[in-house]
Image (tube, rainbow, N blue to C red; front, top):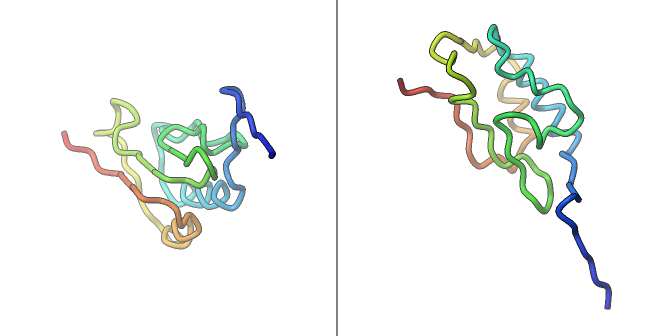
Length: 101
């Protein structure tokens, strides 16, 4: 019998194709206040506003609706390739961009 032990320090890195899709998504936005500035490291599961599944590291949630208090002054302008970038992340269940203020 094979026993697998996972410590709290073990972490599954994000899937590279999903990381690339998120970077394409970021490139399709204007982000004048740097709300996506954490989106530079190799592990997209650690990026602000991104949640991944614990078992597979697929991106599960993209939640950008309230990253900081400057949201009401920030604006995101979508350009082409938005849907292509999101399509790659098939596991995304929640996608939030709105702000109620």
